[in-house]
Length: 387
Ligand code: FSX
Ligand code: SF4
Ligand code: F3S
Image (tube, rainbow, N blue to C red; front, side, top):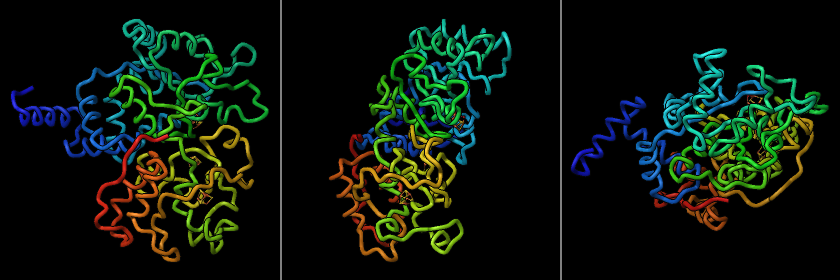
């Protein structure tokens, strides 16, 4: 590093550009987005940037069991080229069956070597459910059952993350009658672990969790199901872009009917947004562009992040209404809605505890100030710890 602050900045900009192939500006935008996802106070992006730039990348051992590899796919198939680069840059992926070049004994040796070299320090990520029936014989890798591998790798891990609904609570493989006894990582280990459910999960939630670990040396606060509160503290319905239609009683009744084509609420088509905890409606899904999440695409939320809802409750069944607090703001759908000013929405979000979902949504909506409904004075979104 150079002797002056400016030299330091210039040097780190060059390093980041070389490492990630992105400009310093893009990198800082990523850090700000991650800070918003984590519901961190203003200024946290600088701390995140410092940690990502300087910290030693944590070794990650990533196991795959009963699943479709959609979790990994969602991390890699991003529209924005920096996301997967960032993920692969902030961690050192030492074992990942679908991404590593090694195969067979070589792959097994790589896993053992990483476990030995980083004993007590590596992060174990498990993707997929783990069959427990008949001593776990329905899923084996390298001659070992998924059950044994999970326990062996978790024993010396600094942190265990269950990624995707399958690993978090059984997901699709555990669908009734669950012939293989597909179970979660927590069930196999007999203790709670951090879970990032979703089928597939939102890559930003995984990245934000890892960045939190990198920046603060700990995983973020979780709810009773192990889900980071900042990402899963609110129900989808609370910040849904169709919420104004729900409140006004305007519903699509059939796919393709007039209400559906007008973008009305999908509740009567079985949308599980009112009973599903996730931030899809606030940060969008993955990194595939604006308004790309199930409801925005015209399909009801199936509750993929929620145990007992996704793959359990019929897709057409009407959701139970939970936690019916007013939304923080009403994005885009304004034509029949009165004047919800941005300032009022911001104040409401602050009163509601400035939950991460609201914070992220308000941050996102700052870019839409051309909608004409937002106060030009409100240039700063409220920030605060979510939960
Ligand atoms: Fe697939 Fe992952 Fe679904 Fe499961 O995601 S997208 S079946 S949650 O474990 O690969
Ligand atoms: Fe959105 Fe579904 Fe709630 Fe309707 S029921 S407002 S579509 S989350
Ligand atoms: Fe899943 Fe519903 Fe989000 S189906 S991706 S939780 S909108």
